[in-house]
Length: 298
Image (cartoon, rainbow, N blue to C red; front, top):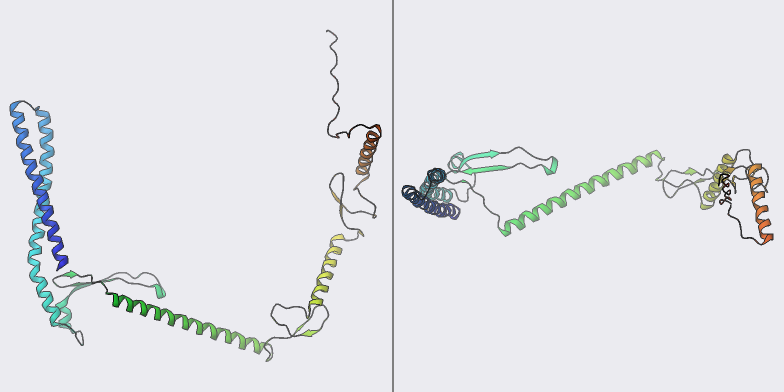
């Protein structure tokens, strides 16, 4: 009933505003006509303003008619509200819902298309009652607390079911693995390094001890180095002159070719010569520039 009374109050205030503006426009139209007759207002401006005021008045008239009809309908609906309240009192605390009760109370039910899937699937349903239409009834604090507790209980039950399913799955896997291992929880393995049989502490353990693991890793590194080195005896080195990698043929070889060895020898010789003469160390990149030739014509 309070919601029903809110709308007529708004319509009444809006109707008063429209009526006030309509009266103002009527006064402006009269003053326009008087100014036209007295020659104070040109006919072109009179027609332009008259058209604006006339269209605004027509719009206000249609709005006022609509609000008057809504106010009349709201007044007539007060009897329907009383009828609905009498039906509610008649059907209060029912033990079962009969067809007559359903027909007296409910006008229609609108069922919307479902959204989501699984536990997140929701479907909206609107119930329209006779005489009052759709009524939105807010939950009380007690009802909200009860709904929250119910939702928490459902979530707890869902988690408990999920834990039970996971536990059953783990037990099934364990039983299958024991059957594959011949009755043992963990199947014995053979160490690939020493060939000894052992019981691993985890599924990822490959060697029987830490020592076997270290020795196998060292042997693998040695095998990788031998595979990389091939027929060469010494490890691969980097040339100190050109920076290229090469395979030395003896332990004293420092350069990849005779050309690099000759370049290094010339560099050392030049450094020794300048050091003996007491000159500063020459810059190998700075080459002496040739002197410009004299012009014979000059």
